[in-house]
Image (cartoon, rainbow, N blue to C red):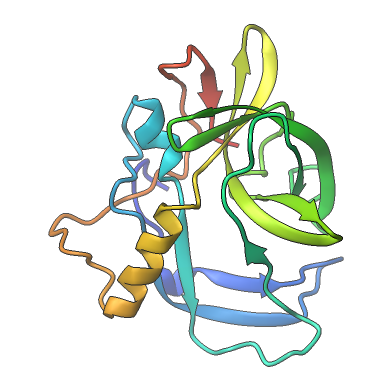
Length: 201
């Protein structure tokens, strides 16, 4: 696919609880909404990572009682423990807790995590667990190295997710922006203001 080309909604399929080559539910996508501040080609750290989030509206609801959405929560504080659950390239048939790690820093609207993620982890949820309840607090946006050590960069959910839900409720997903937002699906190199060299998993 050409770099920067947005995948048409009708070509996207949502597979709920994908395990061992089967899903508990299959759904098409009625509409996708990308945050208007996300810039796939930007070299600015905040623009590339802080707004790297989108929502997909399913063409039909899932009425399977065993499939329940996770709650979301605000950005975790520096030093807090988080976990990444992903379908990385070496575990594409089943989700797995990839790693338990810690928040190293909160930079702008983004998170720098001690997690070492790999290709296939892009978009993976980052969880905190309080009182036995997992909550999604971020999404994996890129992998990076800071002072030679592997880290993961997480997108911000606190403000951007609220923006996207407002766009969905507004009905057209345009949010007053005449220029459509595109998302790169190809790995890229860049240097952020933190000095981290990062790649999209």
